[in-house]
Image 1 (cartoon, rainbow, N blue to C red):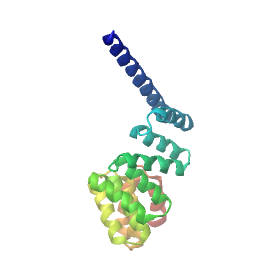
Image 2 (spheres, rainbow, N blue to C red; image 1 turned 45 degrees about the vertical axis):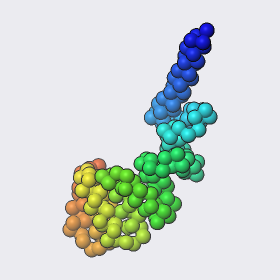
Image 3 (cartoon, rainbow, N blue to C red; image 1 turned 180 degrees about the vertical axis):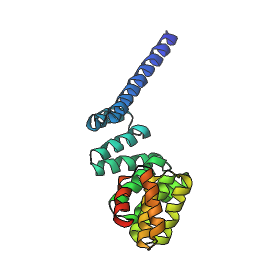
Image 4 (cartoon, one colour; image 1 turned 135 degrees about the vertical axis):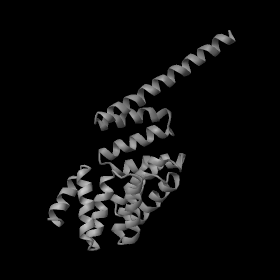
Amino acid sequence: MKNRLSLLALVLITFLFSCNDDVTRKGDQLYNEGNFKEAVDAYSEYLKTNPKDIKSLYNRGRAYEELKQLDKAKADFIAVLDVDGDNLNANLSMGKYWYNQKEFNKAIIFFDKVIELDGLRSDAYMLRGRSYHQKGDFDKAMENYNQAINFDNDNAEAFLYRGALKIALNQFKTACQDFTRSQALGSSEASEALAKHCR
């Protein structure tokens, strides 16, 4: 009898976990299809029974971002960091959040953390460079753009913003080279910059 109860409990637990996995997979599928509101609902359903599931919290935050519900996105990213302060994606997302709020010092703190965790993240260097650029600290901005390009020679945004910084520094020839590279990598903004500064 005891063995049958243990087996029944195991089957029930497996069933519950498999149902939960189905809910998170459904949320991921909805997100990938661009159905962000439905994705939020699916993740929220799962989080009712697993409130600290990092993957679902983070993915719901990303869905909220797509819905322009930035305060809710921020709350989910912070919830992830409360569970795992070293979560790379949540730190990066919080840096972007503060950058978009024009809180560049706060943004830099999160980009610093990402780089501390993974010093090869080209996107983190590029975003930290943009934050320094906005603060008017051109030396640090240039250093970060250079690092971003060092780690990913196909980072169109890093070339674009390094070019923009070079325009501000009156380095037109190399700025135009950066815009040309950025354009070749698919940046439409680089095309506009070339037309404006390099004809």
